[in-house]
Length: 128
Image (cartoon, rainbow, N blue to C red):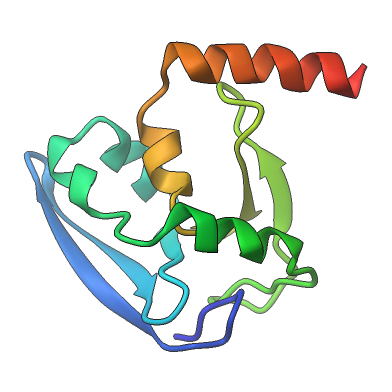
């Protein structure tokens, strides 16, 4: 599978959880992560997933400008989505197959903090 952002090779990574193994894909170049349907939510509360997002968040942010991203499973265009709980967090998703998070986004997704709540308030004010 190729990365939907930089077209480099994606490698499979297996995370052992209490509910069993979860296999996700990480880009060998930009370190973005592809999660099949439900995997990100499953890993959000698992401490083993703390080591999953090994990419540099600053490099990950540079990929936010990439447009016309296609699902690596079906080639349909991915939609940009703001996380419902952390409105400042934006990732790309295919309604049928899963989601792609740039380097650093899964760590942000996993760890909601008071700073995130403050960022969400600021983001809401800016949109209005």
